[in-house]
Image (cartoon, rainbow, N blue to C red):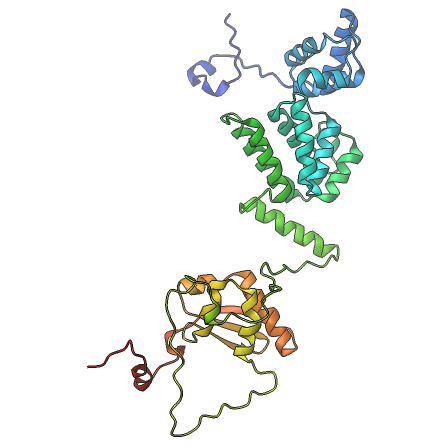
Length: 387
């Protein structure tokens, strides 16, 4: 009789598998392993606390041999308690991991890094810490996806009240995005030259934006918005990142611009023909005054966009009901104006100018909509020569 034991059954050829009796080993329940460890401790004269036996059984992940190895490592202590198991195996501890996750949800980056620094000085392994943090989020996720059968799915390392508290503060999509980020950092620790820095980057990302621009991150943001709307919490409007400066109330004049900020000199506007005066029609009530709007918006937008407002062949605006259509020449200028903070500045200033709520959108300025210049206007520029 030949006995073959392997953990990689998929590598055994089919010709051998067809001629063998297969007996697959299963993982042992945590409670049975803890009772077995208690019986060994009594026979060997160890003082093993029941909660410490359960902790070792959970760390063994269903393997009796691994549980015996962990018990042998902790047997040097006179009394094997939960704290001694944490100290011997270099674990962070359930309470410290739960406190770290609480700080992450509060976006308290300083407290998270301070706790990690203390664990690092105590000799805790960064990979083990991330695994414990991932295990805590996994238990919280089980409460979301299977609330009725969660007792048989969670690890039991944390109190039910602690898990319920985190479950009320996190959505399933947010948990999935955070767990994917942590698992990616755990995989990166294998080849990292500085595991401490890699772990710190992971924790900082969890405090700011764990999902990033990934699909799971976008789903997490959408789920958070849906939950806030369902609870009746108003969604905050994004603040403009370019507030009006205090010192500059009026737009800069050409003579006040710093050297090097303009790469060309603009000619003065061509006056209209002197034969008959040109009268501008009075703007009706609620009409858009483009020049006044530009003066209001200029302090709130980047410097490179301010000069394009003077060129109507590149940037124009048209009011269509309560929608301000910003018509911009396609290409680089269109991409620069097509930014949320720029459109928000135009919408807010137009609303303040017209006295009603205005929404801003950007459209491409077609060739037929651009202003045409007559031949007489072109002759007024000294750079243009006619033969």
